[in-house]
Image 1: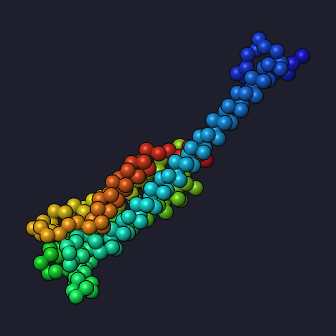
Image 2 (image 1 turned 180 degrees about the vertical axis):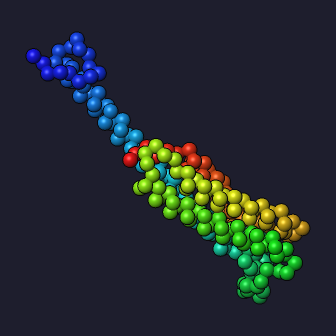
Image 3 (image 1 turned 135 degrees about the vertical axis):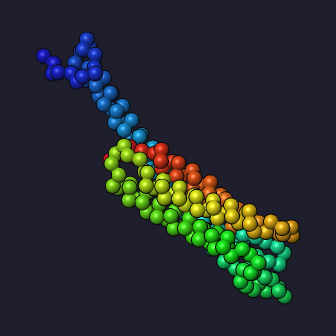
Length: 199
C-alpha cells in the first residue's frame, strides 16, 4: 500500500508518478522563492546605489564652486572665485546679492545633504528591523524632505540670482542640484511603494 500522497498531486496516478509530481511542485515553489529573494536583493541593491549616487551629487552641488560661470568669475553659494592675471582668487559673495535669499539657498542645500544621508542610514536600519510586508516609509520621508530642500534651493537660485546677467551661464553644480532633485523624488516614491518581501 502506498503512503499518503502529498496534497496537490493527482490521486489517480501511481505512487511513483504522484511523488514525482509532488517533487516537481515542491521544486517549483523553492525556485520561485529563490527567484523572489534574488530579485528583492537586486532591487534593494539598485535602490541603495541610487541613494548613494544622490548623496554624492548633493554634496558636489553644495560644495563645488560651479553654480554660475563667466570667463573670469566662478560663483557658488559660499563664495566667488575671480580670475586675475591668470590666478583664481577667492572672494566673498557680492553685497548686492540678496542675503536673505542666499542664506536660504545655503541652508536648504546643506539640509538636503543631511536628510538624504540620514535617509540612507534609516534605509539600512530598516533592512534589518522592518517586518516582512512593511513599507520603507521613514526612508521615503527623509528622501522627500531632501527632495523639497534641494528643490527650494535650486528654485530660489534660478529665480533670484543672475537673472539680469547675460554674459554668464549656469555651471555643473547648478545642473547637479536639479538632477539630485529628480533622483531624490524618484527614490522617495520607490521607498513609499516598496514592501519588504523577505524576513
